[in-house]
Structure formats: C-alpha cells, structure tokens
View: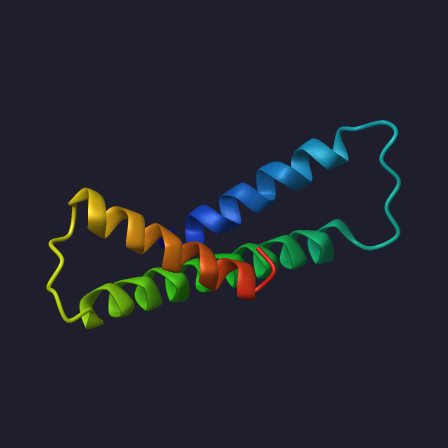
Length: 91
C-alpha cells in the first residue's frame, strides 16, 4: 500500500525527534542527513512492496483457471507469490 510523500516525511521527522531527545544517542552525521536516509529506505521498501503486489496479482491472473479475488484460494496464492517476491529482495 502506497503512502504519500508527506506521510513518509512526517514519520521520518517523528523518528528523528525521538532520537534527538534520547540522552544516550550519539550521532556523527547531521540529523537531517539521517532523516533523509530514513525517508529513502522507507520509499525503497514501499517500492518493493508495490512491486510484490503487482507481481502477485499478475501471477494470480495468469492461472488457466480464473481465480476470483477475495476467495480463499486467491488469497493463498496471492500471499504465496507476494512473500516469494519479498524474500527475493531480502525482506
């Protein structure tokens, strides 16, 4: 599920605010650089999830016997292919 750029930025800001308030947190880079890296990692993860969803839907649609989305069989096959795609990307 795709979330907006604003939401990703908001989440990364919350993480940085929490880290900044931790007394035992020692950082070597500027916090904005850390925030930008958090944003980048989140966007990459979301991109892989979107690809996994698209791939799983294509595979389910390619079966000779048409599967109806939402049925138990479709859900099982969708989750199988979705998880396979994620595992190929180390997730």
